[in-house]
Image (cartoon, rainbow, N blue to C red):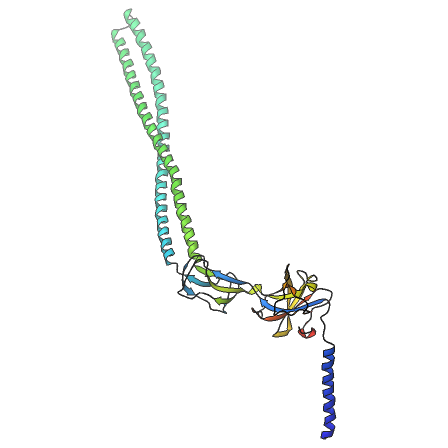
Length: 369
């Protein structure tokens, strides 16, 4: 093909391309009335992992950017002093517990022995009372027999010897009674002694409660100390990644000071701003999509989770519908599911569905802000 024939073709192609761009310029894309489009940056909740007690960092397992799991050990503070106190307290509790068990066993044995002794002495006294009652009846009869024989002897109806034998029997039975009564007194004294032993043991048993309370107080102190030691091991409260490493191994940090800051993977959201006109059309729970600048054809499903109640002056980096608008409302779009491409500070475009229609599949369907 000759040069003269190619030139008209090139001119026609250039005119077509120029015409297309002129058309696009004169007929720009418009956001459908059922959509709201705004740009913003990805934000997230940053968790400061603070120490509850002062101490020296002896181990730091992470660095900036490292991924961490909930419950993962991030750092350890020096707890040697607390551990030594805990060991001493455990030894004290062990000694007190052994002493308590021995004393409790001794008191229980004393109570058991005293109760058995009381039961035995009471039974002996009851049996002795029966013997005394029976012997008293015999003595009463002896006295009657003695009087009867004395009367018979006076009338020469009985021999003097029989009277003497009757008197001897009476005296013998009285002596037996005296012995039984003495034995009864001895048993009563033994019974009182057993009751006294029982009362003392019961009193000591009440003192065991105070002893037990003292052990529980030590155990409470031990548990508090163990909690302190546990607090010296810092664990991640969320799944995420380390945003900033604030402390280093070997540093002494005070109570409440942060060691690292962690970004919660489940807390990412896009922060956009809408004008006063659009704000009234958006409501919590509205469906939305997030488009990262690096992936304009991969929408991330989201929803509206926050709408500011108070307007603020337009931040410099925010694009709005008109330069006349100076006050805007902050709106948060949160992904329905965690997304691995979301990172703190990334620029992104948010699209909210506010009417009947559908969300775009690509940013190319919308005008550039």
